[in-house]
Structure formats: structure tokens, C-alpha cells
Image (cartoon, rainbow, N blue to C red; front, top):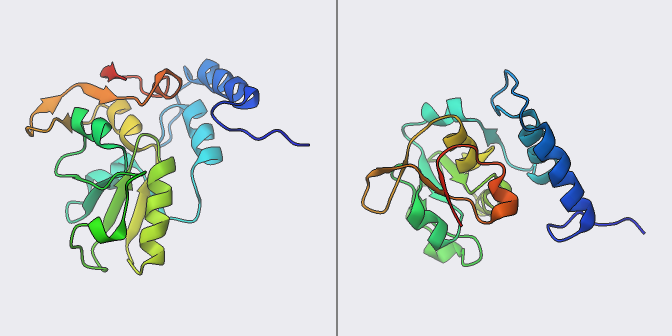
Length: 174
């Protein structure tokens, strides 16, 4: 029987160690770490169009939805992002957004946001994108995040120590 690669499985732990050891390599791609890019290729859905940091910076008319849990959002988030959560996500709690408006969904690396973005596409939203690398890559590339008062912060909630290895800048909060 083939072993599944879940966060608690030995296979997943070995994959994370391998990706971590390779993470010092930097490439001239949108995702700066080759190891992080490979992890994203395995973990993030291809059912939703992806956007990279440079594209996100140019999307001034987009609505940004944060698919992390509330405690993660409260530490820091992208400017003017709206919290929608993941475990508690419900279409009925979605802010009023035209189905034509560009929507960028993000989380820590793009796994949870990809699942929420897929739900939005299935609900008829036309311009939905998953932020590839999400807030970790945003911070890794030196972009700003904000606290609940709208002030710049260097804090980033990294979910836990296993996932925190992919966030290389800022003050890690668990």
C-alpha cells in the first residue's frame, strides 16, 4: 500500500527535511526558494489560476481574502484584506463582492486558499486567483504586512514550527 503524505506521516516529515535542506538555493523565479517552489507544486491545487507576488502588487482593484484562521489574521495580514477563515468558511459570510471583481485568496502557503478559491469558482465568481506561496512568500520577498490596527508589523503567524521553516523573514509567531 502506498503511504500517504500527510503532515503527521513519516514520508511527509522526510519530504519537509529534504525541502528544508534545499531551501538555501535561490532561483530567478517568482518563488525565490527552489525547495519552496517544489513543495507548492506538490501541495497546491492546479484547479485555480495562481498569481505570484509581482502580479499581486499590480492588482489594485482586487479584493484580498485571507483564508487563515482568525488568530493568524490578527497577527498580520495583507493591507485591506478581509478575513474569511478556513475551518469556519461559509459562502453566506463572504463579504458582498461582485462575481466579476478580481479576488485573490491567500493563506500561509496556498493550500487552504486554493480550496477556498475553488469553492468561489464553483459558486460562480469569475476572476478568482490563488496567491502562490501566499503570505509566506509575500513576507519572504520583503513586502509589508499589517496588524489589526492597520500598522506595519514584522510579525508573521507561521502556523507551527513545521510550516514555519518556509517563512524566512519577520518575527515568527506560533
